[in-house]
Length: 291
Image (cartoon, rainbow, N blue to C red; front, top):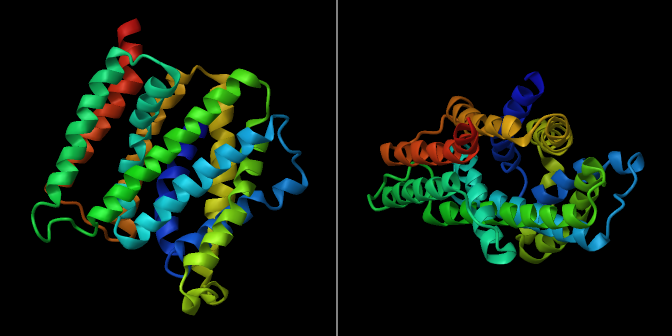
């Protein structure tokens, strides 16, 4: 219980740390820094995972460059930490959609109901932009990019599922650490290609809060968070562990509003309520049916 609650707290605050770091780093620079911290110094002590390297590369590209690269851009151009913590959880439904299309996996009744609720929730978020000035710190582009980041997370979930089929005894921690290293060079190339030369070296003058945020993102959110979560999944059934994931958007909302002073509009609250209900339906629905 303590481990699960610590993970919820770590991952909920994660989005506020991203906002702090983006004050001194461009999204691509933040990608380089985050995954460098996640790779070092652990790579000196942890051997590469005993799996085909194509899976390490694919996971690093989807989860590292795809998910976090797009999310960092969204947070920079028009997305609050509070709402990002909620919208990113739509990865559950993108994973189900990709599983159906690519792996011919059938959706359970709770998942089908959850997807309907999630669609209604996204409609509420979309309707929020129909009223001028009602978006409350977000933009249409930021909203769309956050959903794209969730889709990239879902793609990395599909990679992890396929890897589990061909190599079920690999070390998850080694896999996370070394796949994160895959993202470093692409982020460096993207920064060199697209960052304005005037801000290319601004990270050298970053304040201590930005560096502390990056250390948090690389070491605490990635290494500690994923280590605890993986340990929970190894010791307990997934249906006992996964419901704790519902706490991440709750903590994210509280942290964004309390620390950064972010606000949420009535339509956004409606969307949040529907998305949380959708997640609860998926995570708890199967357990209720079995009982």
